[in-house]
Structure formats: structure tokens, C-alpha cells
Amino acid sequence: MPFKGWIMLILSAALVTGCASESDKKKDTHENHQQHESNKAENENQTEKQTYTDSSQASDDTSLTEINKKVEDQDGSITLKKYAKVNKQLQSDSIALTIDEVKVLHYAPSVDLIDFFHGYTKQDEFPYVRVNVKIANKGKESVHFNPIAQIKTNQGETVTWKEDFYLEELNGEIKPGEEKMGSLGFILNKTNIENLKTITITSSEVVDDQKKKLTNSMEYKIDFK
Image (cartoon, rainbow, N blue to C red; front, side, top):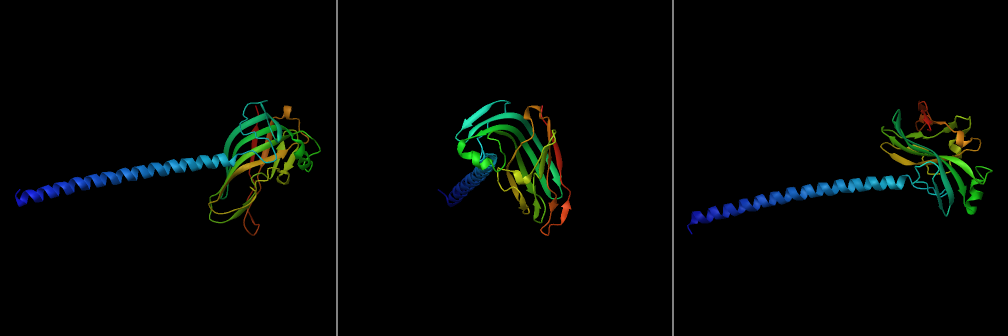
């Protein structure tokens, strides 16, 4: 083969190899992007699963969305009495508070848990409110915030953040860019839940590290059908 023919053959081979290499590179980039998105979605789904779990002090109500449905496990039995899928976001200064879901449940704890609950109520069976929330600090400074400072029913009963028995440490400092997700549970000792129509949730004020108030509290009223 003439020398010129060898040069053309070599150039053609290099061109084909280069195109194949670029194609493989694009394919790898696309596959890596798909894998990244898949991992991101999986992590987000896992976060959701880890967030709204059953309390170690209460029966698992995570599957309950139908009124008067009941579940039983090693922690006792629990019946859903009121339910509201709220998904409402409130904004105060740098804090975004999402009230995701509210349940009112009747709970009969197992014998080994009754002593724990006697610190909150004299009853061996009782109703309580479970509130699922998300909190995000969208500012550049740390602040202090309680997603639920108090809950008040339409029958006049008020319970405060001190009576939360879920104990998931959602109150207090929240750093810049930090997000928290979890549940709070409040026993109702003076409310007839069959006649419960509304509850009003009030957050704390947003304060800085020196306890200086940055904004007023937020309030949201939940209606049960």
C-alpha cells in the first residue's frame, strides 16, 4: 500500500477511535448522572422513611389513615380517631415550618409502658395528638425555635411543648441550612375526642443565640372533618 494510503488508514482509525471514546464518555456521564439521581431519590425516600417512624413509647400508627382503624403490637393498641393531611408551610424570619400531618389517636399502652405515661396522665388509656413536622433554617445564622410551643383544642384544653412525649429533640437550636423532620405527641386529658372539631397549633418565637426575639410565633388552625 502506498505511504499516503497508510496515512489515510491511520487517520480513519484514529477518527473512529476518537468518536467511540467520546461516545463512551457521554454514555458514562449519562449513566453516572442517572445513578446520582437514583441515589438522590433513594436517599430522599430513606429520609422520609426514617423521619415519621413510630415512637418507642407508642404503637406504630404509620399505616393508619382511615378513621376508627386499629393496630396492635408489643407496645399496646392504638385507634385513629381524627386525621388531617395538612402539608402547610409557615414562614417566620429564616425558619420554614411545615405541618405535614396531624393524627388524634386513642392509645391503650402495654403494661410495661403505663408507668412511663403516668408522668403525663393518670389514665391507663388516653387520646393524644401526633403532629408530623419539618423545620428548615434558610438563614445564615443559628436560631432557636420550637415547632410546637402549645396546642389548644376547641374544647379549651391547652398542652405545651413540655408535655411532648415523643422526645425527638426537635426543639432548640437549628443551624444555618439545617433541616429537621420528626413527630411530637401530646396527651389530651380534658378533651372529648369524639367531639373534637379543631386544634390550634402555636410555635415558639424565633430567637437568636442571645435569646433576642427575631419574630413572633406562628399559628395554624386545623379542622377535622
